[in-house]
Length: 331
Image (cartoon, rainbow, N blue to C red; front, side):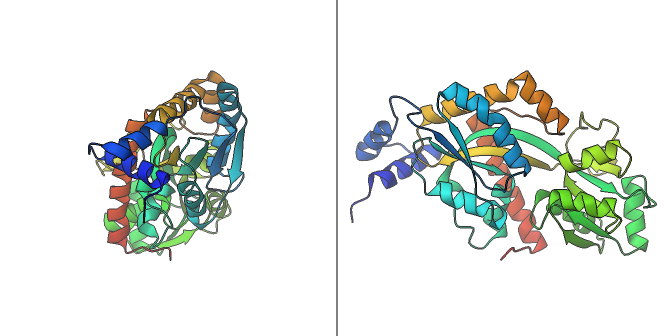
C-alpha cells in the first residue's frame, strides 16, 4: 500500500525530531507542507478540559490577542473528558497545517503512563508553546494542629489522615503520594476531587489536608480560611512569598508544577510552529495579560518550542517512573 502524503509528512517530522536525515519524497513532502501564507482560515484551539477550567481560562485570555495578531478568528473548542485525552485524540488526527492546536495541561504528560490506552502518543504532536508553569500547594484546615510540614508529617504518624487532590493522576496527587508515601512511608488516604472541589472540601472540614494547583487555593489562603504549609516549586512563589517550598523543608530537589501549554499535530511545519510560538509568547508578555494571570496566582512562562519540548520529555519520563512506582492506573 502506498503511503499517504500525510503519513510521509508525519514520518519526516519524526525523523527530524530524532536527528535522522531526510531524502527524496519525505524531504519534498515536508517542504511542500510549509504554506506560503499562514493562517489562511480561522484557528481552532481544542481545549482538553471543560469551560471554566484553568486551561480554558488561559486559552480564552490569549484568544483576542492571537486573533488580532493572526488576522483570523481563534475559536475555542472545549472537548473535556478522560482527563484530557479526548481533546488530545482529536488534535492527533487533525491536519498538520497549524490551524488546529491542542490546549492542555501537564496531565498530557502523565496520561501516556496513567492510561493503558490514552488514544494518542507523544510522537503524534509537536510542542508549540508553554503558557504557564505554576507550583502546586499543600494546605490544611485551620483546625489541624500543624503549622509546618514537619508537624503535619508527625501528626500523620499518630492519626489516620486523608488529603484531597485535584484528581487521580494529577500532579497534585502524584506529588502528595511521593511526599507522604514514598518519602515518609505514611498510611494516608487519598480523596480525589476537582481543583476547586478539593479546596472546598478542606474549607468545609470534610478533609483535613489539600494538595491542589495554586489558583483555587490562594484567595482562601490569603484570607486565612485555609493554612498553607508548602509550595512545590524550586523557589518560593511570588504570590505567597512567606510559604516555604517542600525542598527547603528537608526534601532537596523536590519540585512539581502544573503547566498549561499548546501543541500541534506532528508534521506541522517548523515556520508555522515558530510563528504561533512567537504570537503566544508576545501575548503572554502583554502587561494586561500578565496582570490578569498574576491575579489568578498563575505564572506566565513564555519559552521556545525547543525549551517546552525539553520540559515535556522530562515530565513524560519522570511521571512514568512515579506512576509505575505507585502502581497507578486510571483504566
